[in-house]
Length: 308
Ligand code: CP
Ligand code: NVA
Image 1 (cartoon, rainbow, N blue to C red):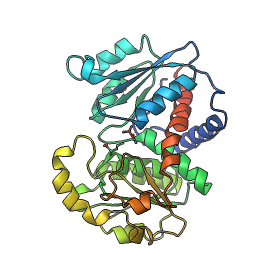
Image 2: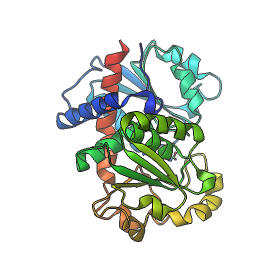
Image 3: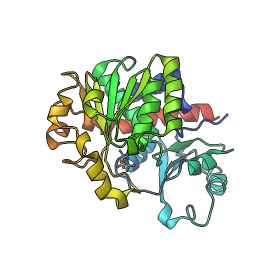
């Protein structure tokens, strides 16, 4: 049966480890795997802007022997005239996989329903699972393990990144803490799913409003923009509401002395994180950005092996 990757808990903990192991192997031997030789084409569709996701999928698909077809919905029929499921019927006859950055998670679900090729979520309003594979790879490289580590996400708890940390962190057996203003708490159903997954893996999920409490003793500190794509009209309100959640030197000083700082980028220095922290010694953001390439190549190899 065709496997898709629409949200972080579409894979089990064992499968997540398998993909991360594969990412390490692929990183060590960058051009060693050619499952897309032919070249076979992978469609990579964008409804929203992107630098890292666009580049890492394009480069990764080429590394795997394939040909990336980058589509902007602004000049395709998808998003206006044609449904995701009809689009999938057309694409699946010609491409090996479909990667899509969009708004509603439901669009991805429609795209994947009954489709014979893997569909990958390259960011939706609700989740950013490819980013989490890269983040977990980065943490594992620096810390040697994932299970048992405490990761604190600060800021927009209702964002795709906070939701993905809840699901992917719990899947990895991590203790996931999210600190957010009540108004921007994670969605209840995502918290419940993360909690259920954590019960299986030995991880845990905790929600906070106090950033100091949430970050105390953390191994990993994460934040993201306060103004996600699509929320630009709420910028003034968000900046006013999230003010106390900026990751400063003082705040990260409450985490473990060897805590790592991650940010999926793009970053707004002086808003969600100070320049001193993001450009400082605890920050691993450039490894994290590079690991998008290796993690997504591993994901594609893994999905393609299971798609036949
Ligand atoms: N982190 C991330 O997804 O970056 P882009 O928006 O540049 O793809
Ligand atoms: N939460 C951010 C992530 C950008 C990669 C957004 O959705 O805009």
